[in-house]
Length: 417
DNA sequence: TGACGTCAAGATCCG
DNA sequence: CGGATCTTGACGTCA
Image (cartoon, rainbow, N blue to C red; front, side, top):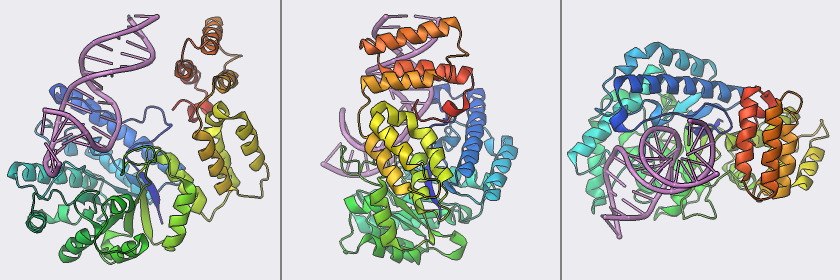
């Protein structure tokens, strides 16, 4: 079983994908962006390996305007070596990657221009995975598309378009139930008929359930048969509702108890789980640490190093409490640990907590900072106490110092996010 | 025509 | 002038 996350990584400096608007998309600008984005991908793959994450969705923005006339570069040749190098790494790390064109790639549209752009977009996604020299188990996840007032003919449009795709694209595609139009039973019908593996998405299924009533685990088990051995292990998408937002919005973090409840009902490990969640890699590591058989407390200590200042800002009491539960090196209190983290992070940062934590962090620079840096920091703290500036202004200053002095412990902290 | 989702880029404002 | 904050872009469907 692999557990992973989509597109972006939280808490790593200079690991953001870059893009530009169409009117600025000159050849040289695009070259610069592609080169930067491939470096970022390489960094993320290394990060994933270091953190035991073996499932990752590559952002569709890897190549800006990759499927559009706005990008006329032969990027697959120009950056071929770089792609191959990253692909080799992915294989060496035994990772599985995927891509997921958004809701705007519509293969069954009634507008032929939209369909041909969708085909171009799929060609682009397949080309990225081909350039990485990855096999057929590295998939492209696609939705069925629109309904246009007549679902039966919309489905047959999808089938027609799908069947006329080149086979090197077809064999990468897997289809997913969406939250508006196509329920899991409809997608399963299509997938079974055309031999396309089906990805079950639990939140989409909740918002747009099938008329046929089955529980989540039954649907997941039904989907399994659509995955042939050359497709790799079955994949599902898992996400949770953000209670503060509209139905279908992904939660900030994966609430671990709810995940573990799902996981135990699943009672299978021969499948991969792609998390769709705002805090990305953080939830992936959390879910991995709570389901792993390794159960090494060092994993939790590493997590604590990242979270501790975010906890301290919100609750000194919980900070002390969590330190206490990590004391016993023979135990592995992962669930308790993450419960405490989740509970604490729901709270607002207090002024007192912010000041205290900032001074804590300043401790790394006290001895090495210049006179001017001392003055600026003290001034900021006074302003913060008086309510004249916000905490993020102080944090940005501390981040600047962290980068300047390359303070490793802080570079990996979530304090600045 | 605007909401929907996504996220930087780009534009503008502020001290 | 640099940094913070607000707006736009790019996509297709649907009400």
